[in-house]
Image 1: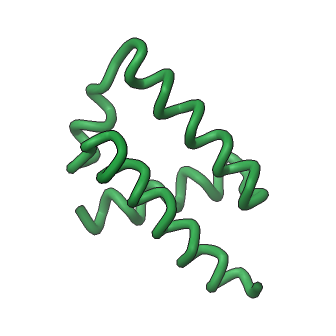
Image 2 (image 1 turned 45 degrees about the horizontal axis):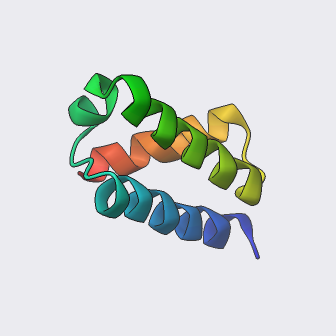
Length: 70
């Protein structure tokens, strides 16, 4: 899988996770989430980050692009 395909697949996975599983509809909502809810989201994101073998910077860039589209 080339990097562009990998990024598109990851976008789908992370968008589905944030919107469908956690009800996140905006960057503001994401960044205002606290406590146990944020811990659960963070844990899920770290698992997917490992699955896609993304660095922290790559993950942050991906999340920025997802939030820009919301």
